[in-house]
View: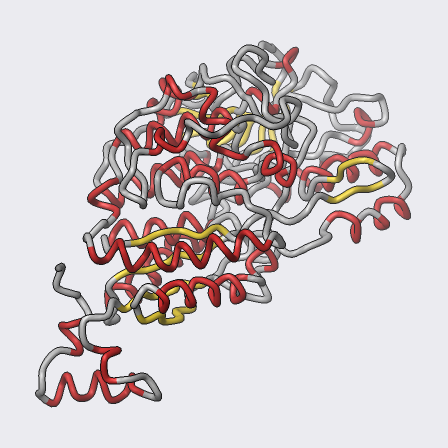
Length: 489
């Protein structure tokens, strides 16, 4: 039996152990402090993080599972970052959220932790913290919202905003119709239902091995999410008993599998910066070149917005992540383990595709080689990334005259100027949006197109930026250009 870390606080008869027990007693029995694992529920629920607002309900199910398995569940509210509202950008505080969570886990008498996240930065920051503290840890993703519909068609959150707002600027959609779509887009609890960063990081976290296989992608309103949360609470107690910590099962092979999954689902480019950060906390040598080497030639199999047609509810119905990974099983590391102690690949034997329109077969992919691609050149000697699946094929090889904007303010001031010297072949270049330049590396790289070109029917142009782009966005956009403009190069 593993000696519990919490015993350092509660074991003994001196005044220190007395104080620790007495202040925590408040209605719990004596045996709560003797040999029962103390499991924190690191909860990012917040009304100001709308994607995570339902996580208190998920936490209640986790709590029941922990107690049922003999552990003591402990609510631990942690920093919550809402992507839609936080200014200037939630990315500015991802590391702060990770450090705050890390110190709370390290400072308190806990033996393991269940990590509850949904919105873009919450799962990455929680995993960064857990990797540094190296206590038994397991993630329960909050799940995507239900499909939205508008005028008889699927309306994906984020993606629909970018599409419809451009049509308003082009004069093909009325402002009244645009505003009418607002209440149709977000129709339930949960995070973005497109393959944005929130959906991507939930699925990638499962491929990494930190989520119980088969759970990521369960819609937030689905009662099976609560069932899975209950089971995960029980698992957390078991993980403490066998000392199954991130450092004992996360390897370079785990990140290999995460990159394969990222490519196969057509995931957000933001996953690159998050996976690099998590690997860094574990001391695993993961580089930008690994994403290119492993992922650039993986077929995109998931036909989801923004690269495709469907939404996350459809992916879950069609078989979910495990069905996707079964199609690329030969590309996975067969030895990489999960929080259950079993290899990820063992969960793929019974993972059929139920709808081959949503999840394509290997023989008929959405894009043959559509994973994250790493670019280098005189503009990006240290690298840049592009997602071919979200780009226009005819623009992947392109030569054009650069139209340069030195800041997002400069861009907004000039982009709709009818005298702007720009045409459909131009390349829009936006500088000053990197980690230092903005600061925080905001999601502004999916630059709106010039109004006069929209009115001519243009819907995509090559765009280059040292910032990031929402995972819900689309277009032929080169992102994360390094070194950034603020570095002086």
